Structures are given as structure tokens and as C-alpha cells.
Image (cartoon, rainbow, N blue to C red):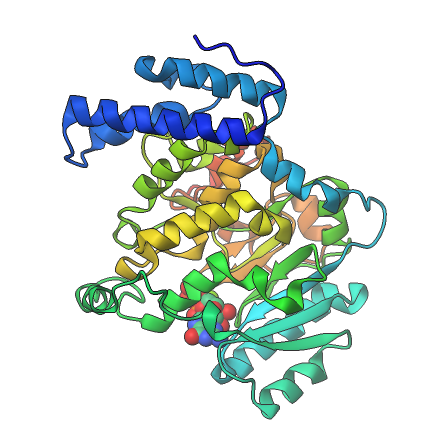
Length: 414
Ligand SMILES: Nc1nc2c(ncn2[C@@H]2O[C@H](COP(=O)(O)OP(=O)(O)O)[C@@H](O)[C@H]2O)c(=O)[nH]1
Ligand SMILES: [Mg+2]
């Protein structure tokens, strides 16, 4: 075993990670050839599972020991350290906003969402609202929206360099992909792919968001069912939460064939980015060997922007972007955000807002706790709550995060 002094710095750790990755590649090539087979990935997972000794790969143990030591000394807490300043404001109003990416043609749908969100939450708390678009917003759109929101409203045009094909993407290959994916929802859509890439890697870089730490994502035609009588942003801040969601789901594997392998490759280069108390159990049933397709449905997010601004997430996004799956497959921002949040955060920093009744077609998040349902004047049917449905990943989340499931959850399997 290599003895590492406790004063090891991040640069040394990175070099260690690179050396470990190189060693694994050489060993894999020696043992299995360059077939790109699952066995290669299984071996790589060893260095991926910090704090889970059971799957450590014997041949790489020297390096793993180093990383495990790093994890216990707190050196691997970079993302968490990056976010920490957002929690220094406890007890005070956070810097937060609503953020909506939307097309001009979706005016009536977004007005429905806005009226509802204002009525159920924001008429009382008066947070700013930021609208983003890859085309200039029309005067009609701006007027319509501004009429419904008494607080500050800002409209942002997305810079071209955030909604384009990077030079490392082969556009012919991307076009061919769209032709053969007609059996997949949005499989033939070019703009949907740009949208997913934007939500994954760019919305948080828009200059209009610079002044905020927290955001609540709102889409057209969503519905809030209950009154939210407390400041959810301040609750997140005061309780040191980072990522909040309502609905979970299984992804269509056809859209993300190589996302997990690419993720494994990345985190094998940076095992020190994964904190010991991560939420791997939500996204994998076998400690990282395979992806179980679970993800937070990102059309609703109440989250901390610094998670995405962290150097660790930015590196992860760059890595994914260079792999090309946003265009050569149809990687969604939901699995990308979910995998990143699950691996970069502590599990207790991710929160299910069971009390925020929410609908995005065709699913409902509706409080099944009768007291919560009554106190918040909910207008949904708890019997239709999707959280513990067999097609949802809610049960997986509660179990992985160690959160107690509410009474009667078994009656909601569907
Ligand atoms: N400006 C702009 N917004 C888009 C575009 N495509 C999708 N969006 C927005 O991105 C979000 C997700 O798109 P949506 O059609 O709701 O996808 P779904 O929820 O996966 O069915 C919504 O807020 C849309 O308004 C686009 O091409 N331009
Ligand atoms: Mg939508």
C-alpha cells in the first residue's frame, strides 16, 4: 500500500487519479483486449465506489486506499465546499428566482403555469422570474408575462455559443441519429437535443442568473395543486439542501445508451469527486456497475445553482459533451442532472417535496399524508400520487436516502 501523508493536496490527488485510471486501462487492455465490453466497465467501477469496500477491485487497491484515505480526510468534498457559501445566509432571504426556458409560441401554456405558481406561492414571496429563449422574445410575450407577475421579471436571449453544435460534433452523424430514432419521443427533434444540452450545461451560465444562488424551474402547462405557505428557498438554504424534486421516473434506455459508461469513465478519472455519503443507491442497484434508469424529473427543480457552477459538475458536463451523446443519442438533462446530483452530493442534501402538489403531464405528485393535504388546501387526488407507483423511482429514492416512507405508501404501487 502506498502511504500518503495527510497533507496531500488536490493536484496530487488528481495525479493519483490519473495514474489509477491509466493503470486500470492498461490492466483492462491486458486482461480483456480493447473490446469495449461490459467486463471492462465492471472493472472500472472499483475506483468509482468510494466508501464501498465490497466492490473494490483487488488489482487497483493501492490507489483505492489512497482515495479512501482522501475521502475520510474530507479532501474529496470539493463540490460540497463550493456550495457551502450558499448556506451562510441562514435565517435570511436567499438570492433566488424562478427560471423558465420557453418558446414564444408557448405563451398561453406558460401563462397557465405562471398564474398557478403566483397564486399558490409567489404572490406571497415575490421572487424574481427569469425567462430565457434561444430567439428574441416578442413584445406580445413580454407584455403577457409581465402582466401576471408583480415582482421583477427579466427576459434573456441565449447567447449563440450556448445553443449550437460544438466543433467536435459531427453534424452528419447527428442528423443520421435523428433519422433512426423516430420510435423514440423527440427522437427526430434537433431543437429538443439543443434544449437538453442547454438545460444540462448552460442555463446556469446565463448572465441574468449570476446574482442568484437558488432557482425553481417552471415549464409551460404545469400545475401546482397545494398552497405552499413557507419560503421553499429559505427552507432549502436553512436546512443545507441542494437539490429538490417532486417526480421521479425511469428513462428510456434508447435515449441514453452510452451515458452510464461515459459517466463511469469520468468518475474513474475523478473518484475523489464522489463524497462518501453519496446517493449512488438511487441510480444504481449494484453499487455503480449499471444504471437503473432512475432520475428526478427535471421539469420541476428547486435547487442551488452552485451545484452546476462547481468545477466538478462543469468538468463532468464537458466530458459528456465531448462524448457527443446529447446529439448522437438523445441524452436528457433529467438523467444528467440526476446522476450528477446523486454522485456529487451527500444523500441528505437531496429532498423530495412531498408537500408540493405538482403535475407535469401525465403524472401527479400529491401529498398522501392527509394532514399535509388538508392544511395546504390541495386540489389533487392522493390516490393518483405517483411517488410510490411501480413505474416511479420514489421508493428507490426513499430507501437509498434513508428517508422514512409515509404511512400507507404501499397502497400507491398502482
Ligand atoms: N426557447 C426554447 N425553449 C424550448 C425549446 N424546446 C423546449 N423548450 C422549453 O424547454 C422545456 C422542456 O420542453 P418540453 O417541450 O416541455 O419537453 P418535455 O417536458 O420533455 O415534454 C420547456 O420549458 C420548453 O418550453 C426550444 O427550442 N426553444
Ligand atoms: Mg415539459
